[in-house]
Amino acid sequence: MADIAQRFPQNHILAPKNLSPSRDGLEIACLLNPGVFNFEGKIWLLIRVAERPKQTAGIISFPILTQDGIEILAVEENDPHVNATDPRIIHYKGADYLTTLSHLRLVCSDDGIHFYEPEGYPLLQGEGKDETFGIEDCRVALIGHTYYLSYTAVSAHGVGVGLRTTTDWKNFEHHGMIIPPHNKDCALFEERINGKFYALHRPSSVALGGNYIWLAESPDGIHWGKHQCLIKTRANLWDSARVGAGAAPIKTAAGWLEIYHGANEKHQYALGAFLMDLNDPAKVLARTEAPIMVPQEDYELHGFFGEVVFTNGHIVKGDELTIYYGAADEFVCGAKFSVEGILSALNYF
Image 1: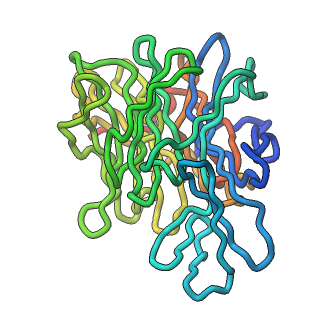
Image 2: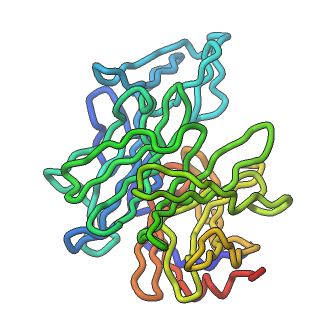
């Protein structure tokens, strides 16, 4: 497998110990998968912060959101109705719960390496019945003067795409569920094409079809339709089990370049790229056969859920692409790429 990433020597740049829990009684289990954007001369990360109750021996406790705030549920570890073999999910009496509750937290930096929490900015939590298990993995797209936050909304109803918008990062408009379950990995293009908004997203099918990347269009960025299947998994390759979009596609002279994640049947996550036509993104022109980044460092191989590199945020400056990514579902890291280097790695159809 190829790997053309130039990882930050400072990696990991953020770990759970670097931030404080949102309330007493909780601990941060993971920092991961930040949305990334420029604002007021700084680089900002909108990090997914996954929290859980402090664990005690013999008891499994996990949080959910209610109208009155965070409620802690606790069950005995040896309860025959409990299946906790996956560190991310608790199966209990026929229902699924997440072991952690995620919110989104803002940090900023002058140099793109050393980040801190600024004062006066809110953390974003789940709101309403469709976000009771939290909100996750936000992509940030700047369209005009408005930031569009497309994120994974999780509840007992399923996993879908929620949307909020802001212009100042202090006041937000909540647009609710814009794509219903089961769907995630929604990345908006940062400009209209022929007057329309476009977005990549990932519906999931267990029995028929697969975990593929789709394209949708919209007249207003809120209401989406004309869905088309764009990128499928590939048998016996690194992206054989699922694929999903990263951040907003990057506009180049050759086309819209998208960095995406893929995983195999062993749940090993790597990054690749594909290229779409500038005037018609439904036309895929090229795709990498080998990944451009694979888990290889200790902080990518070992953590809350190991052998994972996953991105939904980047900064583009000329030919330099700086990707911020989640490593092993626990740490936030950074890596640099050459846009031309990625383009040269593509296989054209």
